[in-house]
Image (cartoon, rainbow, N blue to C red):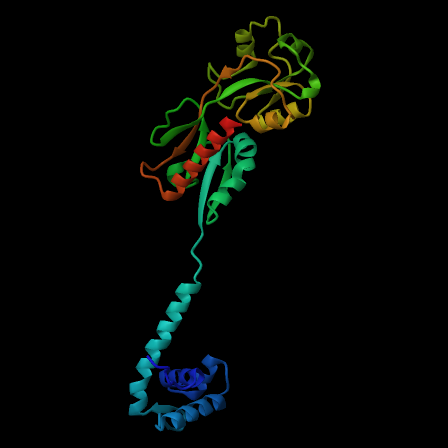
Length: 298
């Protein structure tokens, strides 16, 4: 098709607005120009077309029959332009996803890895909800949660994520060589919020290690496991901790596991409320599984 011979776009815009609003003044206000400019644009279009487009009346203008024929074509054209431009420039609405976990798991496991989630899913905003109280996933407080315990969790879909073991850890500055060295160091206790008979404790560890005579009730106690970890890093004593939560500290050398044995703990579960989870929840689950597998190889 040969090049189109069309009037200047400015004259067509002025005409469409004046015809729609039946007023040069209101068209000028809409297009942020003066009424005189609109009048000049209309006269230029009339001259180019060789047609009279408006009957000028006292306080209004009335489109001629020719203008009434031209107007809907331009109106529909400008509407199509506006829609196409809006679709091209519209930014997709960002999606957000909330995962709830305990304070210690959030601080020691999720936070160090969250950058990799954003790298893998740049259009999905991850919100970390840290609480030692289980949230109501059916109420929409969070989309998914990481929970530690035996399971199952009635009314929820629970998938095992991380197998947990607990062992003595401490700062390398303490230079522990064997279990007997515990007698000359402070024991750090992380108190269980809802203890069970098989919750890992120093008493249970000494029984499995065959270590007698250690005062397992003495020492420093913490209600937040991450505080016990920080106390161990600072060299305040020896803590019986989840090797999952201190894996990064062990790898960095700020903590060491001087000896065994390691006690078996409960797993961490990936928990959500929907049997057919959303693509966002599935993406989160896949990312968590990949991170667990990556940590196991380190």
